[in-house]
Image 1 (spheres, rainbow, N blue to C red):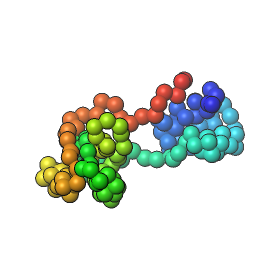
Image 2 (spheres, helix red, strand yellow):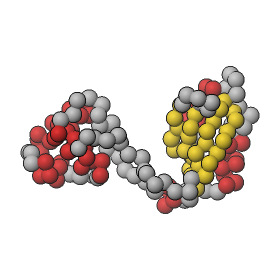
Image 3 (cartoon, rainbow, N blue to C red):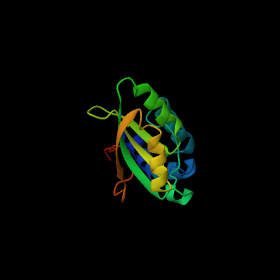
Image 4 (cartoon, one colour):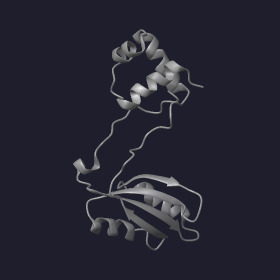
Amino acid sequence: MLDDLDRRLLDILVRDSRTSLKDLAQQVGMSSPSVSERLRRLEERGVIRAFTIDVDPEALGYPLQAIVRIRPLPGKLHIVQKLIEETPEFGECDKVTGDDCFVARLFVRSIGELDRLLDRIADKAETSTAIIKAQPIRRRPPPLGI
């Protein structure tokens, strides 16, 4: 699916998505138009979904993060999912198999705020919450095979 050049381009962009086209081209030994075409094809194939930034939640006033496992009560799945989607403090959420239906990451300013947010779904779901102490591995893509 990916050749060595695609992998090299992705590796560079994973480390710094702001790398200029000119710098990318220099690092892989190609012309800027050729690199641009490669990136366009990677986007069209869905390999590259976005060029994004990494924002530090603490710098925005969210010193606490929690992982919340959520098990909606019978008949409440769609209501709970909608509440999660509409609550901006939920930074990400996965719909999973097993006892819980959702595993979500919540950004909060305080334990009190965490309680208030969880109270919004308390009559619609059971929750289990763990406060995040550290993140030894930040979100990263699967191995590129480089």
